[in-house]
Amino acid sequence: MGLIRFLLRRSWRLVSAAAAAGIISGASSAALIALISHILNLPEGVSQGSSAVMAAFLGLAVVVMLSSIVSQLLLIRLSQQAIFGMRMQLMRRILHTELRQLESIGSAGLMASLTEDVHAITDAINRIPFLCIDIATALGCLIYITWLSWSGLVLLILLAAVTALSCIRFLDRKSTRLNSSHTVISYAVFCLKKK
Image: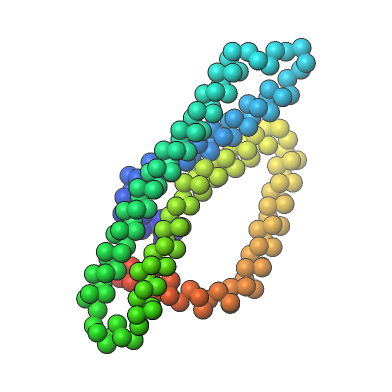
């Protein structure tokens, strides 16, 4: 949530537009899946190649492609602005930091903050449109599964809960190893939050 707040402070319009384009793309993908399933399940005597069906398919395919491209382009612009802004902010803080504190951090820590940590945050920023697309697609598919069968939805929710709990347990056990590697990233995030 901190990353999303950071991005919203930077440029809420770009984030909102990219998220909206991602949601449109995901919803269109789910509608495309539903349309294909509907066409495949038509009785044999019914024409599957009508002009209305073809127009709907082509229209949904174009919407999916265009909204995905728009979302990704907006996020590329946002991530480039965020990278530049974070690096400039870090450089200003480094320049205003006392020499004694800089020496205690060391040149390796400073280089990591300027290169690897900013890159890690940028990678997280680039995942946002895909997250919006995937959430919208998943919600659309859940609605479609609910329409097809309530028991299928219940089974899917139970399976998702078991999978999520298993992942959480696994990650909790492995998190002690990862805590030491997050020290440098935490320092960079702390520097960014400090004003």
